[in-house]
Image (cartoon, rainbow, N blue to C red):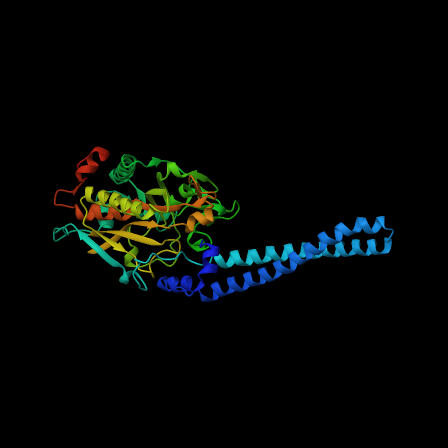
Amino acid sequence: MLNLKFIQDNPELVIEKLKRKNFDASEIVGNISDLYRQKNKLQGVADQAKAEMNSISKEIGLLFREGKKDKANAAKERTSELKENIKQFDVDFAEIEKNVNELLVQLPNLPHDSVPFGKGEKDNEILKTVGEIPKLLENALPHWELAQKYNLIDFELGVKLTGAGFPVYRGKGAQLQRALINFFLAEASKAGYEEVQPPLLVNEASGFGTGQLPDKEGQMYHVTEDNLYLIPTAEVPVTNIYRDVILDAKNLPYKNTAYSACFRREAGSYGKDVRGLNRLHQFDKVEIVQIAHPKKSYEILDEMVKHVTGLVEKLELPYRILRLCGGDISFTAALTFDFEVYSAAQKKWLEVSSVSNFEAFQANRLKLRFREEGVKKPILAHTLNGSALALPRIVAALLENNQTAEGIKIPKVLIPYTGFEIINQ
């Protein structure tokens, strides 16, 4: 959530910066300004009423002592009237605050100055492309056919048990999933991230804290009877560990990693681009989260990008890094780098990670602050997260890119985790 004082002090700047996200903030910012003008006007009247009530209250005792009973009773009636007026002012203030907050949560985070202008994914900036595109056999298969051939993933059984987008991993397919999870967690641990195992459901306050609510309410699975939400990513529960917490600046940054299943409704997703593992309603992912000092957050963002780079390189996958344009960056992010790996049989790039700096946007919602020596008031922290990594498209690329006449070869770095070097039966 944007800082209210910053909006009040810089309304034109906020409107101009949000144009980069293709968001017209002029009406919302104008309404916020109007509401605060109303509040300031009411505050002046309320202050006058309180001052008058205090003055009259002091006179009442004196009037009674002087025997001026009628004047004293009239003064008492006036104080009662003023008390009721002041109560109403409090109700009006609360209503204004409510209306302001309803407007505030509609405003996206301000994009970093380096975010390119653009309307969608075609306008994202490709920063670098690394690795050679594999040359496959003439009869190379896409991953969904390889999964069937080697009995790795049963998509039809998933439909029977739940529905489309909920695959069942079997045999070496399940072992490959587990191997990737353990590899990603081990690498995060080496990089200094503390592993946590979070709940898979969160309450409304947690969804609001990281910005999934109310922005992405329609994309989350909602357990209505208990008013709980299945997590779309471990980012939500892990970042909310620090909700309503004041940290010590000396201990920054805080680094956490978590494996979890992730659940996304992905409403409106259909067609060949979502076939197989390309887009699922349930998938596995390892997440990395950092809580950082504002002065260090972009340095830490670079560090997190390097961490994800190391993962895809160790998996020997061709990859590219993109800086997301204003039209493709999320509601909550200030700057995001996407990683894509090349899927040789499908002949296209697949997104496998987003690494983002949210600056103080989530922290303001979370009331996540830290104390710094010599500074009286607590300071809002910066939050960052990244997929390190999401499994489905990594598995798709690994199966397709490593298929040979003998079978599917396992990258060297994964063999200690899988216990086998090739999938051939």
